[in-house]
Image 1: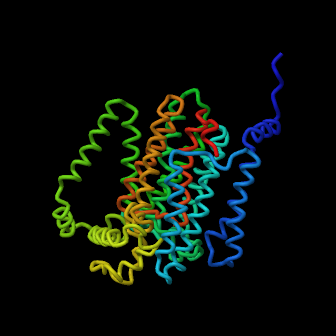
Image 2: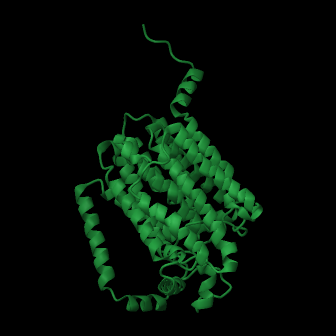
Length: 445
């Protein structure tokens, strides 16, 4: 006789039993409870901030007692610990006294929270497939939340005539609510944030739709999330992010075929050769005298961005080992390297290049640590190139490529409030290699 059908309550209990994990959820609770303190330190006393950090540290002891490890090893351990244990304190010390309190310390506290988030995701998502999927779902869910909130709190720009009138009709109840974004969220920062998530969701959706035997419930949430995030990314009108998305999706499409992989390799080599032989001085001069350089990426002209990049290079030359101090470039630039095409009272926010900003904040040693992190993540993604994990390799590679292209002309700098998605992304990349069954006693500490 056929087994009796289970009731919906029984099905729900079975589902919860698969995804419930007390050690993991306790650590998530600690992260949630401490986030307001470390993200908005100006509202709390020093003792409360120290107590919040102590709570996060206690989470590691909890992890050791419950699952038997302090943390799961990753290929980028040395670069991550060097960045946080050595260069982060140096970057706070290097900041001038007024800017240390205003920028360096608040950003450093956010990075401390991001550090604990990274190891929580890596340590638990690598334990079993259900927890990894739960972390991916949370990753996408937060992206949807950011996209929806952005609809009602972004200071939209009108680069495309068709979209502008529609955006003007949206209510903006979130304007002035968040400290540091009183005038609204930056559309370019918003687009860069959503770019951490969208290519992966697109890959999962296409994979689910293409497999006829796959139930719609397994891919529909990813498809809906991709639609919402993609719409808001389009509304942001960030050309740097849209270019990054296009390049990332193109790589995702080509890498499926052998000829496509050869084409990508040839294109990469051609780009490197071009950078080596093109006279950059004449190229810069041509760009500065071009007629249509307004609004290439954001409210700055292309000429203005080139000038900022040149000042960033001066700063890197003068502060090679320590950096200028975390978040200090935006103020120091007009004191040491005055800008001529940008008004002195205009806040440039950052170097408008993620990698230049990294060197300005953490010095060349910090930039090297970041590049090692990227290389290790790329290698980890390549190691997933098997049939069962190809969709993850394609999606994660698309995110890395899209973010790299975007980061050449803009930046979601380390220590910014939404940069936690950067660490979440890399945690998922490193965790996936372990959850596939490659973990051993040597991969845990």
